[in-house]
Image (cartoon, one colour):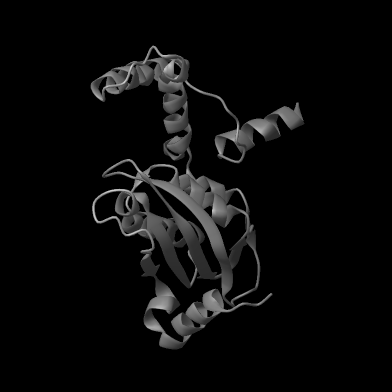
Length: 211
């Protein structure tokens, strides 16, 4: 029973990548995609497209499952009292999200730091928070701020820093069609915002090769 509860809690928190879908939603979305294929000039009845509407519907439900996850609860599930007040940095966190303007992917890396103020958090929880917000329809600017605010509001640290570097397929595949452009966003609170030396140390650490 304890293992069952543990698995259930993990799933609720978004920890397990389980292919479990809402069949009613899948059917509803798939019908619309079948019509879209027709409007694009395709034949949704041909062999290669027979299951495409359902596959797209399932993919979209997975790619937006962050709406069903509480990022703050992810952090609260692994907060520990600790007398540590130096910077904690988790860098090169992979990001995959969907641009809300064109519903095309953007992807890259996030670099996150916080300065503990009585509490630390399990390190794996920070990438999970990133995933919880990224698996929604997003813009990079809001995604950066949401991650910052969640960590600040939940942990109440002395400061939070978030830097995000992403490539956007809405720029690479259409529109301006610049395949190698990278968008960088940043958001800071506390010591990272008020102290130039602290911010400079964070930026040095995320660009340094420490391997």
